[in-house]
Image 1 (cartoon, helix red, strand yellow):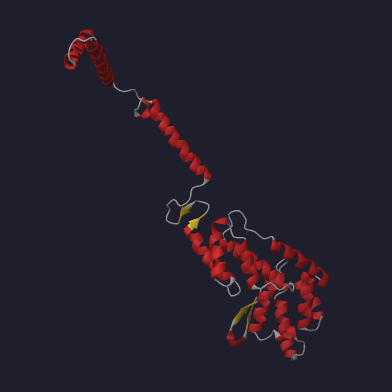
Image 2 (cartoon, rainbow, N blue to C red):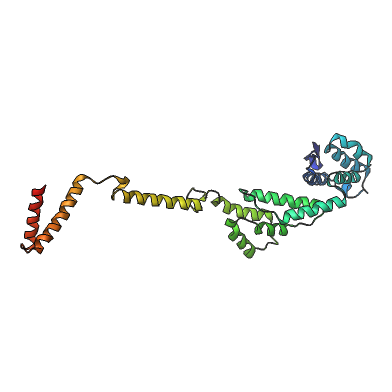
Length: 276
């Protein structure tokens, strides 16, 4: 729903939906401030014209079935309070919700595969809901919580930010920006850099690599020194066998005292030729 605001600005008044009161209330507050109508919500002592303009804005942003109830309250301030209690409950119910949200905030953690910006939105929205119920959850508390629950690959960066920067002056957006820069260069799921080069290997990848190396070595050893386990050529075997036999025969002949080593080797060669 659109409406002309001050200075000719067109304002968009969101329709209130079930379960979306927190976001609706924040957007409506900004819109009413831009239209110079928020005073009618905070203070009933405004002009009748201003009060009716604020009430008309609320009617444009709420379901038709709520209109009779809101109009019957007589003022924009009272109508706003009715909408708040209708969706958030009374003080006792709000206190109960605040306690539950505080517990959720204290135990918040990254989900599997959740990116830095996604977690940033989740913790920011949670803090905004807590503030809408009257809880004080400032940026410093959010920043410190954010840095304390980052995944292990960002722990060193988070520690550096805590020690070299002042968390009291950091914003959630700055934390997300710094960690996003690291996340873009290091993809923890792939174990690679943004350019595709290997940076880290998982335990399974290391085991696969070792298994491949062991398989390659055993293949070479089982193949008689030849790749793929193929037997060496017959000529190589015969030459190797002849050389070994020559040496052994030469040694035997030399030991028997048949002459010099040269003569013994010559005699051994002749003997092998006769055998072959």
